[in-house]
Image (cartoon, rainbow, N blue to C red; front, side):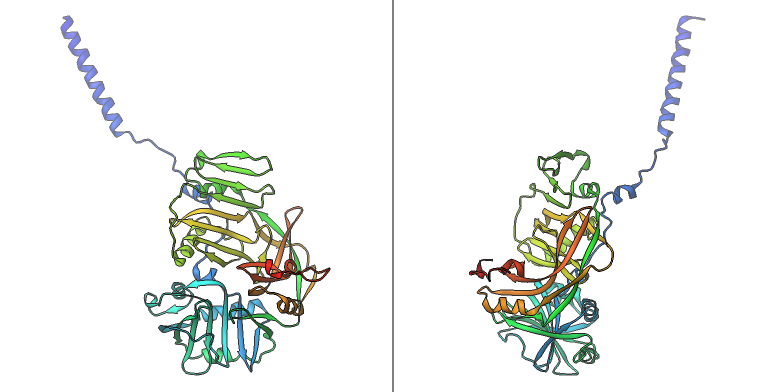
Length: 431
């Protein structure tokens, strides 16, 4: 056989082999292992729950006014039950009014919120025929007037501007429902009233109030899911110990800092430089979505403060706010820029189980508040009973009832404003 013939057969064989290899490559389907997306998603969750405007915004108090006196609930659970019933009311015929002050109707119910709210939330808190028709504005109190059995008026009142949004309540049994509370001393107790420099009534319970101190076992929140949620690419994040015992997580721009005791976290995203004024409803919805994304509501938290692009949701226990000088009671001071998180502070623990039985009774006396109010020269903006939280060894926290006063837009324990031994401060206005 000639050499040229052999070369032709070899070349033909190579061409055929090439075609077979090409066909094999085209038709080959490798078996890749499927990535379990659920494990990645779970790694960004804090085992908390999601909240909505309807559930995260609750009043600080509900007051009943009748027989020329003021009454509030003995039980926070009964107060919450009434508020949830109110949220089922259907409201209609909204209009805006001004210049009439607090309504002087003899029989009325007053709902007091801790901070101004935009009127846009009314459509989420209540049943509204057309939420797009709500007048623009804000409110921090609601009045339900009981001067007409068939036409119950509800007012969303702004104590700063004297503006109000007025509507009617559609349900026919509202009058009877609210009247049943009046005169029921098993549910209500007398309250004292103090009118501040703006002639806005501030209420606090009368007499001695007995409350229990509590000791709570906390659950430590895992840092890893929070790191995965807050950084764009967690694989680029570096962990660095700091000199004071704190831990810092960093990528090229963002930082998450864990406190030395591991009980709080500060997150900063300085790459977001656009800082324009957001509407209050945008701040509420953006912050809610942000925390919901990583299920960060690990305890009972309620909307509590808001200023410009910053919002605070406070920890509540037994229906009462929790305070602490180190801000352990704040879920967050979320500061937003361009509807994205710029700063985010939160506790890294969750209150889980009471340790033992109720430890003891703490007696709070309204006379202490009345004495302070009689001598103070500050503009008191609110009074409430809350819990002072303090950390103990072995991941234990103690909760002790105390009076809290809001002055200069800040809540402070009454004992901080009063010197127990040696008399009262000479300048109470410097708090």
